[in-house]
Length: 110
Length: 119
Image (cartoon, rainbow over all chains, first blue to last red; front, side, top):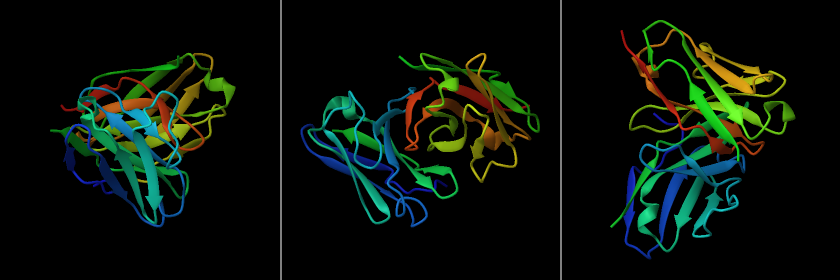
């Protein structure tokens, strides 16, 4: 069982916006601004989308955005495209130099 | 461009030690700018952080695996390695090495290597 809780699946139509939640505790998401999000296509390594809750690495589309409220972080994808169909994972720093991650959310673009 | 490549046996027997090596190119572990990390992913499941190492050899491990994990570094070869002892079928997973920033995000990943624990 993963430390962070994500919905197993979400779906949306092309052009729409979706939000994926990631719920932790006061020992991880609630206490630190070190939340990252990853996109993973089948058979591929994860790709960093968001770091430090809201920041995007160079080259990542501004259609991806992150936020946090309390013990829950969120990833929003706007203007859904077929290529966004993938699994998405959140991770957060936890106390005592530990990193915890979620079980992943499968995004279907219908 | 930073690249990481995992190598090691794809099959390990129960109770034995899983050993993997990650070779880094396009960056130098000895630069001291980043930590270097191992993460695993059982089939159909989420990411599990295993641990990290700094150029000095300083390590941090996941509490759930700490008793069985050793991560080491060889800066002369620009490599770092993972040893996981007393493996069981539950350790079967794709193992990734990655570059870990000070903000605890992994910005570069290896392609991953599947390790199966079976007799």
